[in-house]
Image (cartoon, rainbow, N blue to C red; front, side):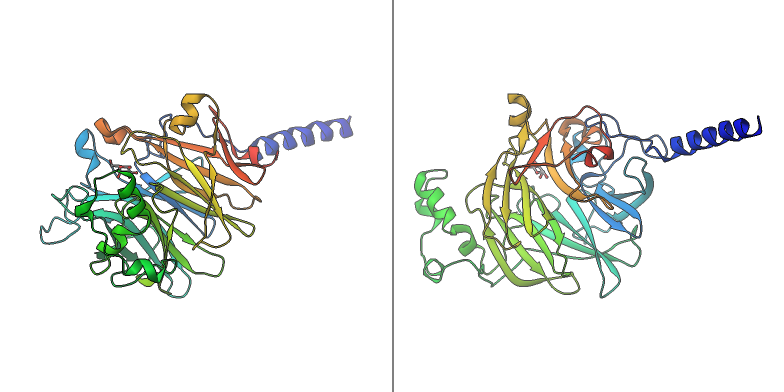
Length: 380
Ligand code: GAL
């Protein structure tokens, strides 16, 4: 009897503990994702930093309506230990009321990303920054810094990067090319060829290069790279950041010239670097692309559309656009593709599409799942 009782108690205990250990949570791409206050997470075009056992999600804070496509509040931060439950950490970088500041309310802040600098102990945020009243013409990248991961972040400056520097993979012969835009019809074959050959790199050489959709990537040796759509969104630039991550070293390469890549997301798996990006159709979704390289500077080899599924899913990246690929801590080869389902008419209602990155024949592959959890990575 005594033994039997003990057995029942033990079984119950195992049952209860077992339940507690089961990850309580799941991802539902495209649904409302409530934070700890029951409010839909407001961190669009986001990126993730993992630090001391906690994931920090930074993204664009949107407000209601079309007005939400501009920055009225700043960059929002959330934290989570398990990726399912998110705590609101408030606004990490606030827009300024001071009209003389470039970060004034009503400018555009997009795709903020935060990295931690081991040498300085500072958190560094870079973001796509467009100046108030100038549409998307400024094409700048802004930088802010903080002592604590959740902020407050102090805005330092915005730049068109790499002024006066040639890309490392840009041949001498083309540096002297005198082709100008005036003689070329936009989108003609001649124009496309000239763009591929660096028409806009030469145009922007002195002033600094254009920087729109962007991401950051820190390699295992601590070197950080700023990856952005440049050259009128026709070509990606991969730029090295200085040791403190607060500036550009001037070393950069042109990647996939003329391929119109936006929304870049980069991750490393083993010795290979992978890129997932989108085409260039504003807020409307389009087919994703992927590429692989042996170094962030490239050369990058296109691997095609990583999406699998119905024609519509493949052509619209599941009605979303990439923003980040998150390495899941404590699991091998586990990566989450993070994307935005934009709602430009009511920006605050934008949704999040997260999917596990699978690999088939050395290529990243994305498949729709209505609901999933991190256990998918254990079955591979
Ligand atoms: C997208 C871009 C977004 C935003 C939008 C504006 O292509 O990825 O971040 O800039 O255009 O139309």
